[in-house]
Length: 162
Length: 119
Image (tube, rainbow over all chains, first blue to last red; front, side, top):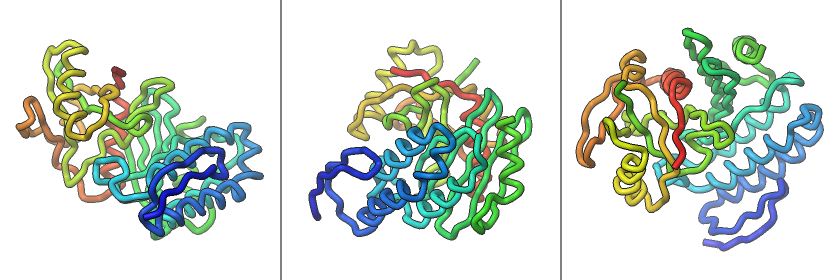
């Protein structure tokens, strides 16, 4: 086990024990996110919040059971998919909350009203799960992520943000 | 109106501190169940004390508050509430579907109906 204390590229200060190479890999990916997100997300005018959320969850979830509730560590593949997905979000969309799910998948969550919310889950196999609540309606599904937003995901995102 | 309470010990994971809305993750099941409490007409202080004793102490973390939602929301989602003591007044939300995204849709439904009550 190695004790590290370092300033991460996204402006957070990490201090702790990294027991796994997977954890180190996630930290490397944070650097990649900054490089990857720097240009496109800057156009949203709210990039600081997304960076803050991504860095927070990535730094917190480097080990299994990081939340004390049995959740798996954040998967590098999920982080990579999230990076790619965020880069193709249409300009002007509100930025999501970022969390790590129980299986180590990244979850992007939009809550735009009392009964308008969408959760996208980035799974290690590069599929995107979606779950949406809008008014009395509720739906869910899963689509492959091929480098652009699946049409059904885009429709749901628009439905809760417009 | 009967309610259920889901205690939070991780800041920002179960709720948004900016507006105290509840996130999907607050209700996602672990091993097929979501752990909640039915605390009846307890006061806020009594609820916090109950959560600190039976959740915070076990997790060795401070309880930050609880997501609260009407018990009826659970059954309206075709989920079930089953008593599961100890600890006292502990219940589980069960009958979750196997599909992860279906689970998230139901957890999201509960989250949009819930409010977060901070400590």
